[in-house]
Image 1: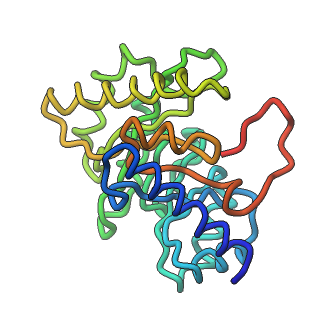
Image 2: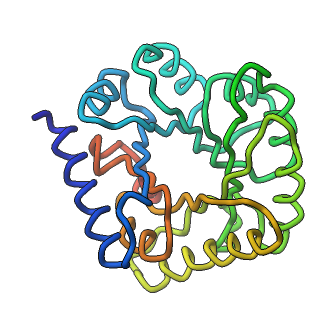
Length: 235
């Protein structure tokens, strides 16, 4: 067994244990392998161990991997900040976008999604911690944005995504994740058919699953540590 395969097995066990502890079916929690900065061979090793969904943060790097690994029939999620001048490759290559935080980006993705492709699954990123440095729409601006995105052709609004501030305070993390769940529930009550909460990373998937995560985004615990500055938390 490769190291990546062993790591995947350990992460899946964490997901299963966390789901059971929360009284949930483990099958309701999807694992997104965050593969930014890792070469295609690392993704091949993960795919050989049964991983199908991969998350990329950088447009050109992600599009290149989609093309190189096309024969593996993987599911590709774009999870990083997206500039309006870089939406076209994402609209054409990816299956999901988690990081919509303004209508301009959604408009461009909708217009640039090829008609022969299935609708692009999208999530709106919400700034649940109120940090000025964080991407994401403010919670009070979410309802109007969600209704506008849901009305666009070629997109399918699936749910919400968040990246809370890095902290070891489990109670604070759970409160951030609970905020996202509450926001999603309110949108569903307003008539939007949402089924996705994209939240939780390598260090906090248990807290996210306890609060209802349906997709956890895990990179470091699968592929290893990246050379990040100490102030930046890995995915």
